[in-house]
Length: 325
Image (cartoon, rainbow, N blue to C red):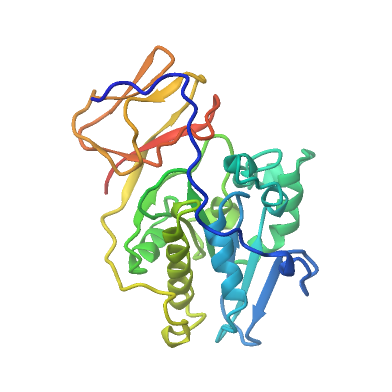
């Protein structure tokens, strides 16, 4: 293993290479909810919800969704709803400190339980989630557009249900499918209520398109959005604008998350500059230190998924560990 990364070296933000999405024109909406727009075919069919800006510093999904809403494409059946979620956090974005606008009070993607939404708690994110809840509850297909702190190949996060895994594998996106049970510190939108019910048929995927401000993440978000709409039957392949999709790439075998490593201290540090996808060959090999506690691979062929200390604090997941399905 390489030398340990210095314990107190702050993680540097990556360069902001994407222009900020201009979504002020999306504020007013016929839905009565700001930054939420519906494209209704007038015919019976699926309810597709596409969400972006769940975290305020994740540009690519918002830019892709904005371009889609302005493209003139309309569903051939059912209804497509596009929602820009945490616009309050997005409004605070500062290129000099680009990771600081991830949320205002708490992570928007950890409040999606019936208890939190129906409880007495108050935060900027809870208030917005309560407003968006009816759109999530009616969705039969959900595509939640995200990006990542570190440069990494695109990921499609499916939860544990086989119907989501199969749908993700069929898209031809080439993205690594991640099968996981979510987080201990709260429920994601894609795991909300009936979206995670094994007895139902709804599809819910979360795309991690690449590094937040890398231009390639925008192309991935556009590609995934178009493929998702075609696969859900909302549009046909001939409706897709030129340059919005990439050639088909078969997906690798899914990665099943077996462990989530949660920081216990601010002294957490990796032993290398891991970016995701690295395979730790042997059980017992050192991955990180958390204070004086070693973090080691629990089995041979352990794959690192989304390692990052950009948002380091006790209780935050710093890396997921997975093995091939």
